[in-house]
Image 1 (cartoon, each protein chain N blue to C red):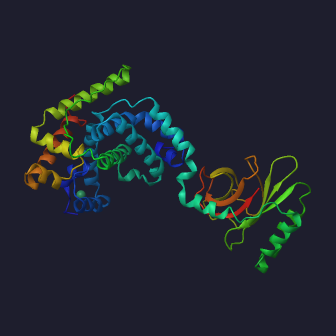
Image 2: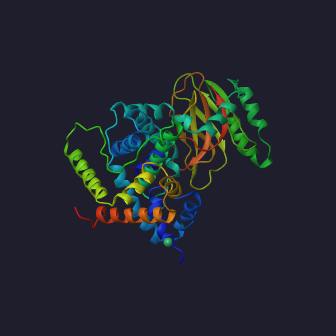
Image 3: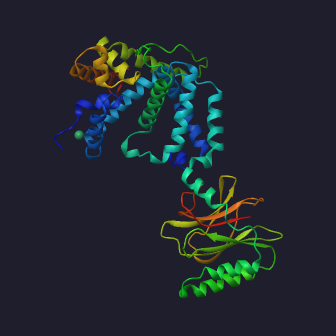
Length: 179
Length: 230
Ligand SMILES: [Zn+2]
């Protein structure tokens, strides 16, 4: 039985397995968007509780579990930021490495950190203007229209920068991308 | 099908579309495998961005989360629990056998149900020892049932139920506080059925019967058709 189906049947062990697989990513998203470890912990709780309640509404044909989980996590973190008034005075950058370092160095963790480093390298290779708009959208929770207004650039420019930036990342990170 | 929102998919994947644009993409996706595949790849990029920020949560987070969901399991079903709470007040406490039989007869509205009802009444009246609690029907359906708590041995239900629709089963529940515990299913049996409860009873428990997916479920989704307080 698929993990999400088991969670939908209110199997708490299955929720634990999902947490083991993706808890670090969700916590990291919470930290980057909401801005503190305390906020990130609240966000992570909110996210997995939402998964627990909403697992029945997940439809595999509409997208992967990761995509579904990421949407919940971003929304929860952005909502947290809005409720707590953090959003306006934070800077969003795609390449700022998290300030906390994992002390556990099991093999899996090494692979994960190599992968994270590879992603950060791909991001750093983007032209600054593309990197900035992607970061404002992804970590800042701003729409293209909001970014255009905030940065004082035409909407069409914002749209093409996001598209080009994402396409480049896709080429570099996808299956055919350079290792 | 010529109108693919290809230019918007990257922004969609990182949540950057405005409401109207997002709605247009949402409407298009179910009709177009090409755009869905495109979006899946862009979703992987978005996931990579998230992954690059991975960070160890405090060790306590996992335990807190799981303790929280385990203790709130029944609260996850607010409509049903609210219904139960509303229904669990006026149901009969323990009633004598004779009255249980009278209740069973009172529920017989249709002549064609007479034979079944007689069998049910005989079954309830035939309980040799123990306490009998009539389960109150919660709608004007034809379901009826009684809980028998023998002086020794497991409590069981005597049920007279309509046949469950295909793919469904009747499932018994012991509701303790606000928490429903699965207590057995009738499977494909219908008519007069005895069902030994797989849960022990403690004073104050409520017993209910709902219609659920075949094979039974861990958390009730159906509305109770019978309810009784032990
Ligand atoms: Zn399309």
